[in-house]
Image (cartoon, rainbow, N blue to C red; front, side):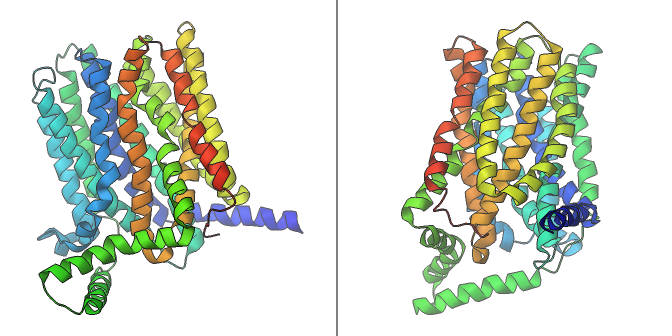
Length: 458
């Protein structure tokens, strides 16, 4: 009887992936993932082929740090309406649309400048693109959640997995287009092939904006009233009504409440341990990811090779193991999933050391890239599930944004020194990847110490 129940549960879960709303969530995920190609792989390879050093490329990645702090202006995104656009297409979609336009302008700007002569302008435009992308992520997550009714728990879980698939689809397939287009234009003998490639990526931005219009958005009025009621309730307890108390009430309702709730629920020691774990968990993966395309290029693989193995095959692998990883997390528990994900990330990083120390091998290259994507997909689903089970349902959006931002902070700030680390090792990529594999150990040690004390919303 037990086995039959498990089998039924498996098929009952799978059916939610075929809900028509999942297509819209898939699009939202792609919108969120695509900018990472622009300021990640494309920018890194552009700077590399213009002759800039690995250290410079690594430090340029600091622009990703803005993703770690988008929770700071999230309340503004919830409350401020975009003139004209909000009434025409809706509150959430208007913010996404505006941020997409800013990203498009950034790409057009890049197409007119030389990074060697105007590095500061290139990084400045990249920072603006990153800010727009980090801002749209706030709204993308909100709109994704609002596609599904709060009582539809199974559909919400399926939507989370599909959103991850969408993110990787935007990132991987966007990378295929960017690298293949750059390689094609370079082979035609066009000197500014990267600049023209950015215009090609701009076309994709336009298509994504068209797709946004087909996503249904609920009435924002009730959410706005809820925000105002909470402010008034806190303001009433302060016994004063002036500009200073209004600001205090606003800050308390958006920041202090979720923080106090998190520390009260878990206790100070465990709360600090959870924060430290989230910050450290994916640093090794981030170090590898930041330098991966540079590594591929230095050991002799072309942009087309990278696009084929790292992006196309990687996308297929990622989609498959994101869905399977979600199933494993549900059946075996999120804590076990986190341990397994950490071990898989470390093992795949070690495999890159073998690739670095061996002769050029397409088979080993494909194996390393595909297994790394499998581990990354599994880790992402486990990580999202872990954070989702930690949050207080009274402060879901704010606590999720805060915890997710902590994970992003670890990956973006510390991993910015990845290029400097390779240079310090005199270009010994094998040792570099061994070090990245060891980086997961502190986080898993913390998780082991806390595993029986963490309060999850099981």
